[in-house]
Image 1 (cartoon, rainbow, N blue to C red):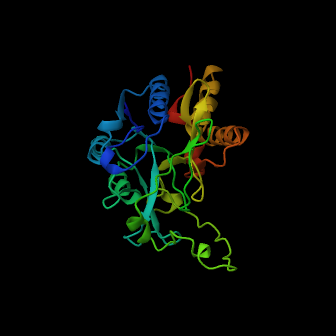
Image 2: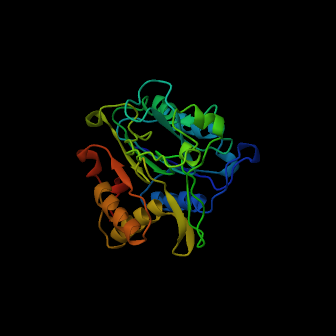
Image 3: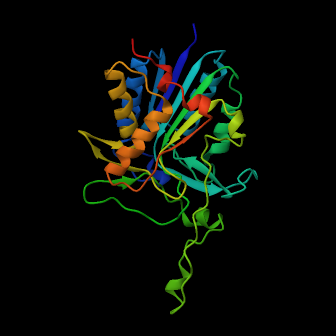
Length: 291
């Protein structure tokens, strides 16, 4: 019988030495997705939260899961955390020249947990296995700082130290503040490829990626319903659970469209993105069809 394996990472708190600010809804996201996976018949669900979600802890669990995959197996990796960008050092980011990274508990921007590191692991997966990756964290193409609002909404983007940001080549200081009367045109945001594409031709992908926002946006969390959640996670879950409650499957494409509508209705400036072939995004979420 095919295996159904999941790793749900939720990080509200971070090591004091990392300098990463805390969040409120990431663990809630991980638990919510985990309960949905349980409904979908997943037999191995690993919840990895806060202090347990070190870089080594995340990667070792993912490596073990990928190594165990066989034909017909299903792997879900879900991460809710802060996110940031670093300069691409491998030469595979030909549009944005940056790699996307997620914040582990022990985040160190000098040894970031980037899309390339995930690529090396996921690329070893059995070609007959199905991989779904959910990323509710920021992969912003800008370096402007956003702060929490009065109602508790805050972005899941972490701003690395200035010395790390400086290496990206993008300005971290507005020189217009120093030169009166001079202005610079606003740069058009560059498309950012998150860790889901992993440098592969989209038509050759054997996995689906759902991410919280476009490259030039941030992913927000807020009090949605009774708890704090990431906006993408919450509205994706609502779409899926409503369909399941009615006894119907829902595809990744359908759930994504409804999640986008939910985020727009909540007036949050982010657009969840779905990536993968039409064949794969047209399959039921988590491979589940209610009885």
